[in-house]
Length: 419
Image 1 (tube, rainbow, N blue to C red):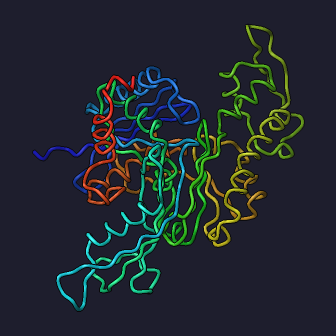
Image 2: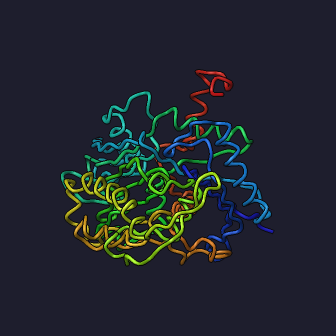
Image 3: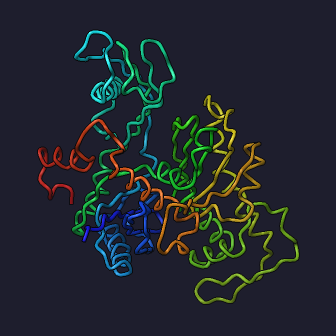
């Protein structure tokens, strides 16, 4: 019997940890076998702040998924986010080498060389680690706009490359949090790229789309145009900030504030009837107080407006923004807040929709994950499957990112130094 190919997604968020274990079917589908979701501890705005607590939270999610799947969590693809993520654009240039003088056929080796040249010219510091190298387009002998140069002829190959990096300490803390519970991360993926893979279809990426993934601790942004990612950014506010505002404004515990946000929250106060009244539980067993739902919306509106306006300010000046034919797609747990899409249309002055993960190539227990909060995890599965089909995230090396970092670190430090 053929051994099952297991792919595991691990979305390590500020408020929740989600683990999904899947296998590849004979029909080349991703079959969801187990889901684990637990409250997150030891993280702040997507960054590990307490390795022990983070490890314990991750372990709970993995063990829950393993029990449901009756399979081990293997080939774990992990989402990474946070303000430490930085991106660069660079141009690489190489002379094409071949066995024949005329014509010279461009090979995979030439493509790897031009990407390496771009990475070198980007002058990325030793305190940062490259997690994605994504060619936007190639130029062969002054002929621009080429997406796939292999097999074409030319003497000079250029590549415009989008490079995404992370703080080396943040990267190692993620790996160490997983390693100390005796699991291995296969690779890291920027969460906005993972979410885009789950939510955006090929037409949206071609026509141009802005994806905003509003998670618990931050909002992750990705802009696509003509199939290429051309901008990424992280906004340091998310659903947890909205919950905190409600807790303070209503003088109620955070747990109750989260429930109120989910059940009664709305992004646009003027759309709420003045007569809608709810009872807000008090702190420490005190008697609850009555508040209008519109008052709650007035607490929520400034924060969600801030997140969307900060996003607009980040993207409004990039060249691709005016060409976003597919508009804005908002996903992530906080995207389910009522009125968020309508508020977004006012701010961006273009169509805005709530993005749900595509389930067309999934099998198994898919009903449980038809929710924007699972966009990152499902995207990790899609990208993990591509990885095994010969399309790793960084084709400039035959080794995984984990192997490169870990081997290098072992040369410099003892393992205990990371505890």
